[in-house]
Image 1 (tube, rainbow, N blue to C red):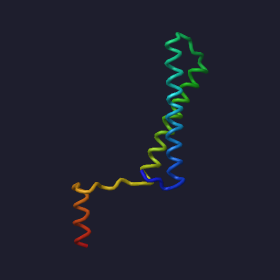
Image 2 (image 1 turned 60 degrees about the vertical axis):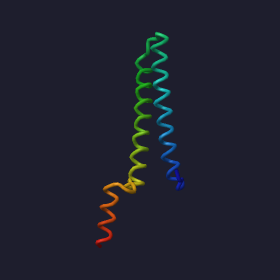
Image 3 (image 1 turned 30 degrees about the vertical axis):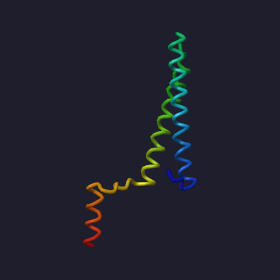
Image 4 (image 1 turned 60 degrees about the horizontal axis):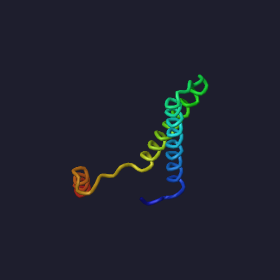
Length: 90
């Protein structure tokens, strides 16, 4: 993967932070189940918000990455050859 500058690093960091937050929320949640602890309402909200924030960060990173670098058709695909045909006719 070719790094194109600061913008790509922002997407990578947003995705990594989102993954970390969601993973920490999942680990805390599962460990409280395994240890048979009763979660207080505040703790449950904190876990839920941590997971939601992490998932939202991952989704936002994906949206930013897709809008910044639109997908190009692969060589040899039908879309690619039809584009080449259209360009040749023009």
